Image (cartoon, rainbow, N blue to C red):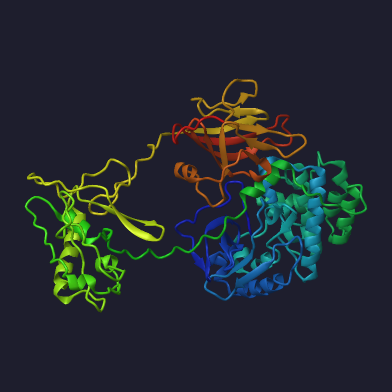
Length: 619
């Protein structure tokens, strides 16, 4: 169901791939097999699922559809610890499909192809887990028929068997008689190759082949043409040279030609326990070799992409309104060359002696109306009071009922309009700031208007500071970031234990710990803790599986750390490295040294952008 080969993990959708299947939005292609293609999607709740879409050739066969529907219904009853459950399907639509839970782990085929044969303890736990899966599958009345390394996924807590029972639907189609092969000859049982009845014992023979493949790294009956392999499966003995002694009895009994002579599922589990030297298998937390376990992280599906929100409605840009100024300030600010100022009539003694009520509403009149009863001292500029040099004072007057006098309404409107115009266009006008002082408002003049015959500019000069508002209310563009430097590509660098890379080196080459260079990227094989990569001169970020590694991504990331355990760095994992010297690097993990190699190292591709960010002082 969830076939993943070593060529890639999440492949982008091709032009001929569907985008949606029955409401499931497809985000990537996981692999392809003899019966169809497998895609990554998500449930409405955001859980990743693997969706297998059946090939059109099979979809056109009515007998295939009938059997496919029966087998899927049976598969949905299988709920084992070591199986990937079928959660949804459709056998009647234009294109049959089924969905299973997504398992974040490489297939056994991909793990062996990448890292070589597995150690004995891992093989015993692998076979015992597959046997438990077959126990549940057979209990539901299903024979797998196509048990092979690509149908066994290696998860962190044990194997997962996928695609159980689906091959039976293809056995009935006319395509099989015309040369289309659904099963894999290398892992078929003799009775299956000869076209005889298929039983649960058929899966036991395939399990023996899977065990031999995991321990040897090659198929027990060799490779080559389908006819040659099938002949050896039926007539010859398997080649088990190099098979560890602990596994010999288990594998030999499973590969018995006669189905009646093969062990049962329960016998297989007992044989695994005996070979491990225990009465009961115990699954350690790290049952996989380090290099294989590291591949699991790279296959963790990214969170479901959020639906694209509609673009926001554009609103017209409105210049910010100038702050409200007192009439006196407006009048002073409006003063300019050849610009007369209207001065209202001074209030009569009767008006000044009448108790005043604060007017309702807002605006300059409300802000400046007298709030105390009794005689009010004459304002500056009235008879008997000298006016401040170079200024003209305007006072607002209210009627006894607290409302502005009607005969002064037009005057007040004129003054407000003059104030607004003065604030927007006059240079050198008086500006007033209102400050709270013990609950009282006071106005402080910060400048005065000079009488001059020269024409003053009607707009303020643009300031040099970034983001300073211009007269129209817009802002100056922000300062430009550093230019994008050229990328330097370095492929397949083997960084050995305790060696490091310095991004400032033109020829990026691992250097040992004693060499006096910047330890920008260090790989360490720790004996008493997790292996890790680290940096001593910058910051690291582990990108999410769904992120695209690029200069822009690395510039914007802020989830900084200085150490990352290698168990989180599977094949294809990417890291951003930012050094204090201002260099950026995208580091892609290609793999690790196989178990058989005497050296410990990790293989990486490195893309370097030098002087891509502002340099920081070394800590």
